[in-house]
Image 1 (cartoon, rainbow over the protein chains, first blue to last red):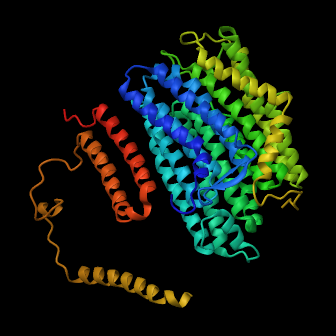
Image 2 (spheres, rainbow over the protein chains, first blue to last red):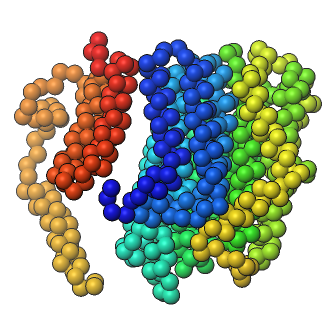
Image 3 (cartoon, each protein chain N blue to C red):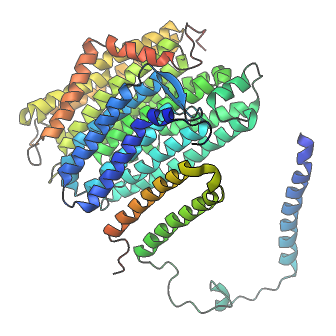
Length: 492
Length: 118
């Protein structure tokens, strides 16, 4: 074995190896065993489940593997669990949708697993190139997944748009990384932090922070790098949209936190200000644009842009409590966002696309359970007690006030109040608007029932008892090197 | 440090200056006689008989992509072969894993009919 590697390294990347093995098995099965959609789904789900079990065991560890390229710590484990759960829920909600759209499932499940592998490396990478390769693996899988509805011009448009803008933004990100490497002479995040300690802030580094911030801002769809999001979210197959808006966002936030908090604490003043501005304009623009949308997927796209604004508060605050609150909010967001998209996915039937707001009219009569679930997810996204969304927002905004960012919290609260309008509008369409319903009745299959059940359970339980997840989030936030334990002097 | 870049700076200036100088001079001395032949893509080549924006069979692209995959494989195998002694058994196993993944992709492409020329 080459110097620096040991058998333990393979143990630490075992979850990723299992996932890659499962993905390859899926691809072989899809060509060797024809017409076995159920078998493929079960293989994919079993792979994700085994990986999840392996990852959970790494919670509480704090080591680096593979010559210091990967960190196997609670922070990585927390994000890996979020990513794997969102992959599992996406797989569960996909099958009927794929049947209606006539998508071949083998390649679809394979690409979902590949994207998940990329996300897992983004969660545990502590070196710029490793992080970038993880991001690239995820992005390339998504370029294909977004364009999976081959006869649909909107899906094609979305794929081309995502590919071109994604490639461009990765270029910007890489340019920023190269500047950091040029100044510090290392790509390891700990090495970068050590090289910059006690140094004066140079203009090159500020430029690097802006470039890396812009590249990551594109991936998390923060305003003003959000222009792709509504079109891509609308054009992509609905389960892919769900995965894109939760999995890829969570992984990108992990990467963003690692690069800035671990690698660039010397420039905390600069990047904190940058993300302050991004957070404020993201939540404001996202919420105002969502007010007038008539398409559900577009509305959820703008709503997710607003949620990125809320999540960025955790990065701006950069205290242990702030990051922990942000991780908690990501966990909450996972359940409510995927739940909402599960309903939109179920709306797709052979005779109707069903992603318009008016397609929901009269849902409370036709399928009360689906209407109730959708209503609950909407209230949670809006942050109304006793849902999980309320708890998440309370911890997050509380952390901002705690660190002295009073105005940021005020703007965020005003924005949440604004957002309630368009979430309630969905509820109004389902209960009050009793137009003649179009399309055949909604059938919710067993896999979709499980996905909806998990999402609903998560939203309810985290609304009543968020302490459990918050404690895990605190452990995860504490393992992030360079995190400020106590309150920092905040407030610009 | 900035001193080292002065030759580069000079080179850029000379390059830009040369391009502008040439364009101005040739604009001054050239004679221009327009005719139909001058508008063709290749003035001295075979006369074009179809539109340049023709369509190709998608199979050309498939073959090209498969070629790139195996091209990259060879590029990767050369350095491995050179330091084979150093990498020993571990290197051999790594390469076999790499080859296995590629062969899997090849089998996939084959079964999907990417190699059938209809």
